Length: 446
Ligand SMILES: *[C@@H]1O[C@H](CO)[C@@H](O)[C@H](O)[C@H]1NC(C)=O
Ligand SMILES: *[C@@H]1O[C@H](CO)[C@@H](O)[C@H](O)[C@H]1NC(C)=O
Ligand SMILES: [Zn+2]
Image (cartoon, rainbow, N blue to C red):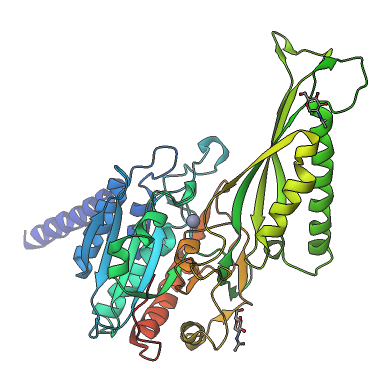
């Protein structure tokens, strides 16, 4: 009887344990840890063309509250809010540190993915698949996890105030996001002395760091000429004029690409120009009119200028060789952001002893046994250019070593161990930067 009774109790306990363990596996009151928090954040779809910015902000505010950070939202453009978190330092009068990331991501084509792009599912070897896992929701949360650990595990108190900003619209140029924020009175009041923004994954065991972006231009060239019968050879037709320019541009492109192929410069260190569209021809119900030379033709190019390039010489080339008025051509340059800073200097952050923040950053990496690759210019463009325009030093950095570069690609993923290591890296960087007292204490003026 007693034995039976004990058996019965044991069985009940077993059943109870079994039932709780299966129920926690099936529906998801998941345990709360850095990886599950990262997954939850990745499951919030913020992809263009219709990113929802309020959901990720609400998630981040919950995190901020649990860490004890102050928060406020700013909305410089309707429905494009940004979130600003702060961790006040013991000496709020000296310049602060800003950790920036963007809320949005590029779209994903689910049919081309091995895992649904907003599932954040983990493979057996720990790879977390999601759009935004590398670009750049990893750093968005790593900043917070690092602060959580510094605060609650290390009992660390910053000397400088730390701000964390989450901005909208980076992936579509940042003009309604970072550009408005960094140009605002609210930003000026933060008295920011140094900024960390996103970087890129590294396929080796060295962390990559970026001291400049290339400035993007959209170039449109248009040609006009007399229309003519398709059978007739005549001078100055629109297509002929356009094709002469396309040839000249291709020659320039090849000369720059040769420098890269010869190993004399990195891709991101030269001016690139790539054709993105050609618009010409007279449409017909079956395609195009085939026996007529059109009177107008145009082509579009993506142009990227490294900070060391001379924009005036490129403008001159466009005006004189690529779209000369003497050949009935016109052009339009769409500048997508600044090229020089407010003092007319190239948009780059010094990575030598002239920049005290650089030394602190570098030491923080080596302090935890990390290796840093030679600083690079980012081939693409981030919001950091709007910071550098103000003359404020900014580095692009995403701590992802031994990771394929998958931003904007199908099957974007980040390995759990790489993500967790990144948190440690930020703990070192954040504690070093925020306790560093040596840099100029003068207020940043814009
Ligand atoms: C410019 O266009 C006009 C008419 O569209 C044409 O008559 C003329 O020959 C063109 N000139 C050149 C240099 O292409
Ligand atoms: C540091 O780097 C900047 C930017 O590249 C350069 O202009 C400057 O001369 C360098 N200063 C020193 C001390 O090497
Ligand atoms: Zn990004």
